[in-house]
Length: 451
Image 1 (spheres, helix red, strand yellow):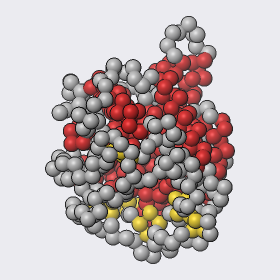
Image 2 (cartoon, rainbow, N blue to C red):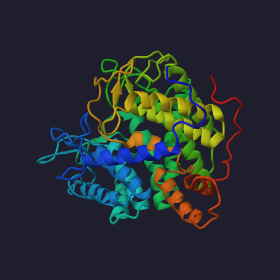
Image 3 (cartoon, rainbow, N blue to C red):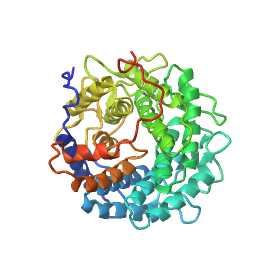
Image 4 (tube, rainbow, N blue to C red):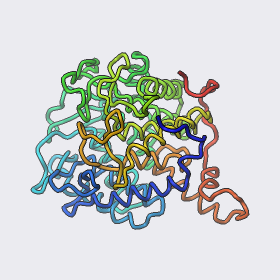
């Protein structure tokens, strides 16, 4: 069992700042000379045997945009490298949209997915906030593609996949792509100042979380038919699928929890109504995922559980720990409750002991005893989850990581001219300077997370 943390003292701000730099420095190896970013192997080296994936190129572009916004000027060339690939080899000049994968000889056959397109939106949004050339044009193009082909206004959610020519849509509907679309829509709203994206994000959350998860005692249903009928036994014969696993995914419950906090904040700042169920669901999703998933004896979360909360795939993926860290901090920042902060530190203790092994990035997968394994994932594809986990507690609450970094950068400049006798670290003065007034959320029950 990881050692009990001292509240808010581990990991320290200095360690977290160094970890952000270590992650981004290691991620530079993913730069592919043919364009975009490739898959990193277990030692953090570019794996030339794998095609370049749209989701990896877009997520790495987003990550380097965050690095640039944080003051890492050398990351600008990597943001531009990613933008060039998204505007070049990954872009379908004939039909529009983006290919899911590109090999040495061009695009690979396959569908166009909402998952990858959501990350194009995220990358373009973050690069726009970072003021990189061509980013705003890419954002406008990506937004138009998503609205024309993926956004189903009647359903208030995203279609999953299309063929290359947009002539036939897959009947499957999935919560995973919609979850990442919510994150992307939050980023687009901030970068474009178009609050309509917040309304779309709310409609997705209303369907999948306020409707679906609430009906299942806050376990998130992941798989649906074309009319959004739930498919609870989907992939029962492939429970460890990397993107569409059977059953309930506690890591997604945690990720949704953070996004509900962020959506409430974004809507309040934009002058949009903030339904009370957003913060309610943030708490309940977190409580359910931790209650079902957290192993109090050994630490970590299983990849999946069944509908009664019993583990199915027991491997511990690094991204689940990252989302637990991020959700705990988001709830702590929104409520001020120390119970969330204690869990944030405990999750960090487990993550540091399990996934940081002296090599670039984080170990992707471990077994229930914390030993490295590669049943579902091999290598270290990207740093998106780990980077955001390391950043979140260093930043003011904001609708997106890019906006938070931009705000912190502006506040840091203001703080530099303030009273230099202030004993607080510069980073903490910056956070205090830009922290929003408390959101108009329902009062939080005392005593931290529900059990």
